[in-house]
Image 1 (cartoon, rainbow, N blue to C red):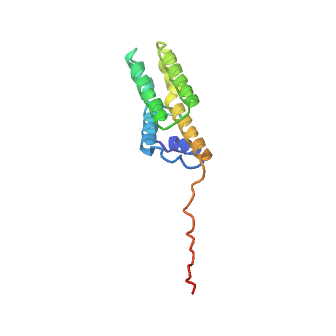
Image 2 (tube, rainbow, N blue to C red; image 1 turned 180 degrees about the vertical axis):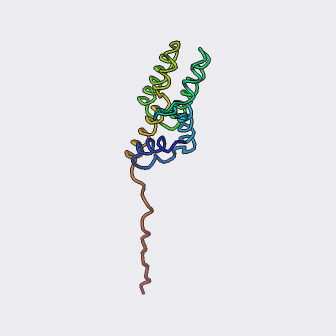
Image 3 (cartoon, rainbow, N blue to C red; image 1 turned 90 degrees about the vertical axis):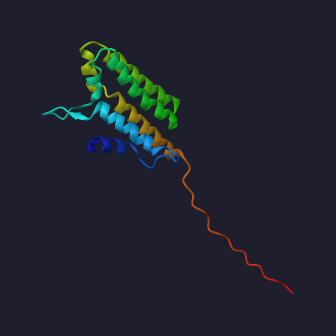
Length: 153
């Protein structure tokens, strides 16, 4: 993945992730977001696009495929324990992407700039980071207490 993409997502994580988060799943959703939204640099510019605008150029079928891959990120986020509010925001992003992307010709350009998957992964990472900040600090095992027992006569 592009180092700039990784740096942006790493900045969103202020601390550790909550205990029990499937880090492999997190890496998978990051990879899907990168491939769909930022994997191709437009020559001569700093603009990055992914496969989403290319796939959505195929009427109806392309939007369904792009929407399905976007929903993968939402479903994985639900499994990772994000709040209903965050899931609703993610679903709104996917709905906007599907609506905007379905407009003939203009939709392809819209998909190039409305990076739904990157937005949703950023929401996921921010939520997981916030959950980790709210969780009680990890405690270490307390020092053992020794009690000396003496015999009395």
